Image (cartoon, rainbow, N blue to C red; front, side):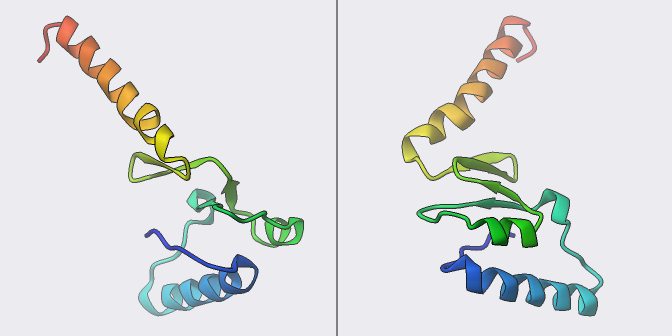
Length: 96
């Protein structure tokens, strides 16, 4: 899932608690090792980083194979440049 939070110092603990309870009831659980947080207009405090061992990034994160960035201009280079390069390799190899 992808979630947007305001004021993560307050809302992140509540979200994680809710997801933990959901997991308890449903049998699903949050895979913390794959959990990524992209911060936009937010300086992550050391205490929240220490309390929640998540992957924190200020530039980009990958979601369902697509890079999401807070910089709109970097979306094309992050995502389509590599796809185009791979397509060209396949085309040159005659596999299209």
